[in-house]
Image (cartoon, rainbow, N blue to C red; front, side, top):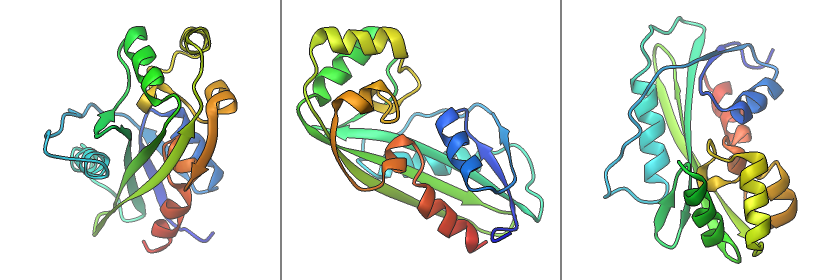
Length: 189
């Protein structure tokens, strides 16, 4: 095995779980509550990097010698502001309307922490979205319930199939984890 550590994935995201599983590295999923508030002074990559580090610092257990904690956070950045996860259907509609017909940025911050060191980094991708009709947006919201997704969409589902015109950067970063960078960083542990 190239990476001889066990990953402790602190994420409820099924997409992150799927990506980590694909690395064929032993892992377990843990869940704990973290306040995801951040200062208004933070911008772009600083937000998810701060949140990933905050999640790493809040880990309630002691890491064993062969374990690496992985925490992450993903945001959409457009028009000089952040789009996190929507809380209502109306908020999801507003987000999807705002990103339609534009190119926005997706940032994922990652924190890897062992019992002896911590590494953090981020990745950035640009995503160009075509304009969908109101009916198409509502169809997506009603059928795919994107309330656990930054910017209200999943690139790996119907929205990605129908609305994403172009990606500049890592596809998996837009899914929620720049898995190539994560793998490279894990090899250094």
